[in-house]
Length: 178
Ligand SMILES: [Ca+2]
Image (tube, rainbow, N blue to C red; front, side, top):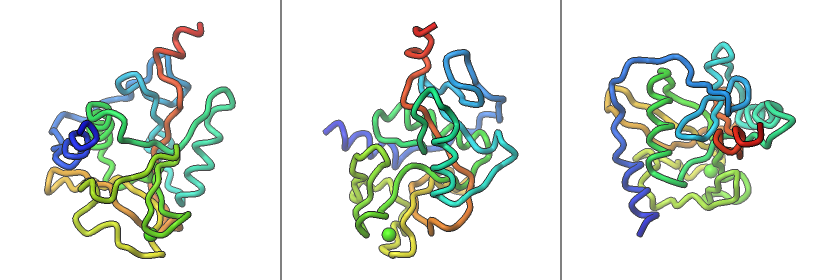
């Protein structure tokens, strides 16, 4: 039941019209990462709108910290966390960015990079996606400002897009280390 609620919330998330804001980096996150509800995210918009293929984006995420595990960002743990991340994406004017989901291993079986299954019945996909194509195997967050909506979509892994990384350590947890 909880999962269903998260899914519906994601589907229905409406992007607010709050003004773009500067980064929210706090002491608890690694350099260039932003604290969003206690989780640390990196947006490639902070690096001159750097665009890469999905694999290159993932490699770059891995390289961002030698101290902590860093990965392409994932979603689906808590609806308030997802909504906060989506709002940050909207605030930055990002219309498409790689996240950590793919069906590279088995066509049509979408997985988050942390190993969880992406439920294709979740309605969190774009209405026309996934495209059920072996040519579109990597996940993007797509923002449609005209429709005031954001969706999880798929694209060719070889296309270059902005990307979003995160650490597996929370800002509050890191703060306790010092
Ligand atoms: Ca596919």
